[in-house]
Length: 188
Length: 188
View 1: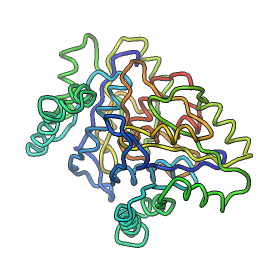
View 2: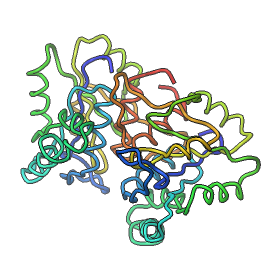
View 3: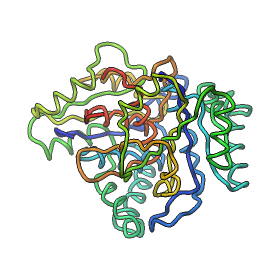
View 4: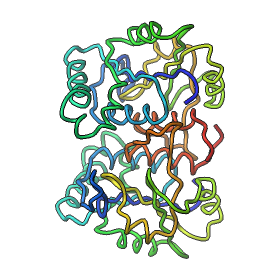
């Protein structure tokens, strides 16, 4: 990946099936898959965002198992991926941590299968990344997607992924992988 | 997706970390994520391939929960995706089931992060799909990937996915999603 790209996986504020704002539970496969995709495509760091202390402890225990514990010894490739993952209590904390390590502004980019309004294409975001003036954080929502308030205050909205028909229900793990592949823009 | 495309997720013969041929265990998240990606991108059917009867029973119980049971009532989108998933005892059984529903030949396409030898690009496979002369089955390996014997007797090898660096450890769930997105070849 050219450019300075980060990921935030949000468990709050996100929607449930009735479009109510909730805090979702952390999923082990999300952490692993996002860590692996991020490392493969050159994302700088990924933040697992949850405001619940017990959930943050759980994520830290998982990361610790694969970075300092038995998992990392058994599977060095997984350790390498997990070393670039950490927990944040809120998106603002993740953005502050990124800003502390980067020069220039940090721009947030909301993603979602049902985003409306002005969206930027993957090609355009790739150009912005290559221009290098800002660091960018892709925001992915668990549950039924990011809450409206969070979309409203993000700097950009990324054009939704879509197949050829009306069905569009990728897992967040799959959406992360496809988004990074599109942003990498390699020859196909 | 233009064309007649199928997926087979293989749990045997696949490799373990020491490159030994094993039978891997079924993973719940694989079934769900592949079902959702397949439905989103217009894959006709997906086959979860395992020679172990108890594992086949488990997969059938999961599929049943989401197609005929409480899961499908709660989440109709998941039901729709799961209705296009079934179990097969061996790749040959899956290919025979596909052949019974399709005219013309059924071509197998091996995938993997470390495939060597002559590979076809995603763009070329997209052209073959659009030409419509054959049905195609993408073969994905769990564990550390497809066993050599299976790669040897497949009709094609698909160019490995890769990011920009040497690290290339996507989950099979992520690899399925990215592969289908590349084959769909939609405007980015």
